[in-house]
Length: 284
Length: 112
Image (cartoon, rainbow over all chains, first blue to last red; front, top):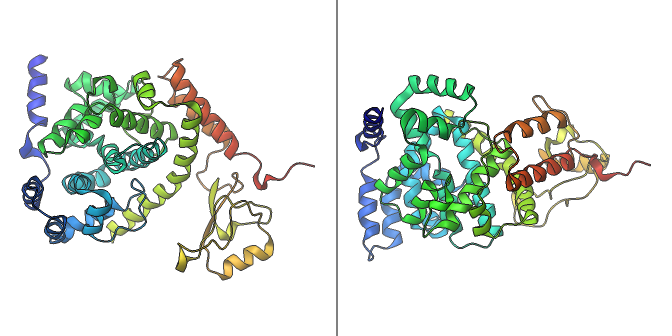
């Protein structure tokens, strides 16, 4: 069984199996590593790819960030920061796949971004946009897993779901790894910073986070809240247990949580509209 | 709170959100939250081209909408794995209260 798991691991974590990323991404990476590169130069590079720009702007305008109308890549970079725009650029092709094949997951991810944004703002945390981005990306590992296993995997998952276990437990049982590991590996391969990697990797195990436990706690809560609301579908219908370490790290209280829930339920109406509008645009 | 097409608006429904002009979304609202609708107000909103509004409660039964009972039992099912966990239980209670409030009497009118 161990050998089978190792084999599965090597299939999943094989960069050549990833959806092709435009060449611009590696150029962008190179530019952003260089301190002397200006935001305008990076914006110009990204804007030169219309398809990519459109995808980034679509994500930048999602309710996860709460900005009124981000119309250019430069604006996106200024409002959201370079890290966020880079993340959106890198993950855009995965989100396209998610939207096409796993609409429920796409809505779950959007909703998690919204929830994380609300939590981060309520608690006056720094780097709200990065936290929202981590939440948006938290389940991309599931897309990669599914890409590599297709129908067989789906059938087996169905069966396991009938046993009423969570998708996390199903992944561990079937593959010996879970979507947090795969997701973290993916964003690491994109050279995204730790503050984005850790919340993705630790959203189901906040205690494992080190420098970014606050961000991981927010994503943990965002995931739980959005599952409670029933918005979208992340693979199973069960609300995970709130880990005490997350509760304590954020200094959460019941009144604050109640306010967050009110605000989130309100914003989810917009988020549903956003998701529907986006789909209509894509169909054109 | 429920977002409904203006066509389904009726007097005594109470606005849950401010309504803004389309051409001046950053300006002052046409109509503020908490205002109870009247026939003339609804007409005015129609003339101004307002398409949807958000009202308190859940006064309109639309296709596919669940009733409170269905929503609460779906909530229970979702929390099955969380069992008796105290923190998670608090979240469930918050949501129960939220649903009960949002399905409450619309219009904020007291029964006389």
